[in-house]
Length: 330
Image (tube, rainbow, N blue to C red; front, side, top):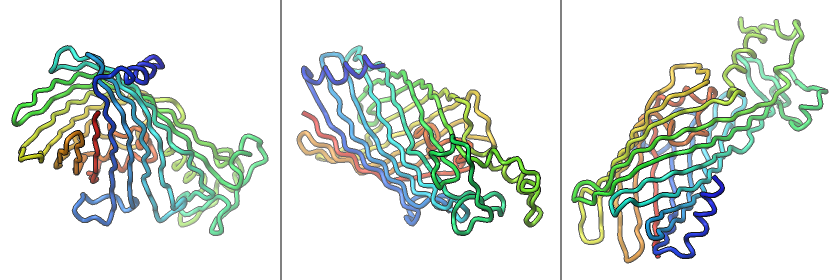
């Protein structure tokens, strides 16, 4: 894939057209006009910078994205905010003025999450002030944890092949098809899994046995064995109304997923559907778009890093966000 990135950064020097996109998305749990979210969700923000070019029949683009999903819950760890970075590129060939075929590759890396306490059915283990038991280990492999009890790392890699046909009729702008394969890699580290003392494991609070609680909770952490998802996506873009330099737009994306080697805790969605509605404002070589997105099953199929055993119970719920997109072409 390195050759794709070399092409992406070389062709703009000779390009017929170059563009830059700035995209910002927002979600706030207090916004009543968006779909209700889980009580753990506070805010979400996503920033994307993308640059692209057209050189004869070659199209290319490169993007970087930062996402911050602010999450808080009542039990330890209380703050489970997710920060992740994504970057990727696309290279395509315009068969004619109306048809484009392309391949793309992207990686998404989550910032390491570290917690100094973790609750197991009423038992709080770790080094925080309200811990039931303070847990530590002399094993050197846990030295990197410092005073923390657990760390979680994750990253994904996605390869796509796609086709898009431009129609530019009064009602329909384009439709597209994509096939994608994503690899998920997670790892976590905690001395809790090394607890072997029968005295400690058989302790009970309110009929909850510590050993059973630990086993149940650790099973819900992201699996360490790599797993994959295969997905097919269908997209449709529309323009409803065009008045002077204003367009009312609609976009529809259906994603069908299949997971391989994934150990599901609950029944996970096999599809997702996103609707975008917005207004475009044109001014010479600048397009400003205000839009709203609604997802049928949260972000599954759209933000891979957000999905694993620890979070899958959120993915049967509707999710919405607002966005602002600035496009500048040269």
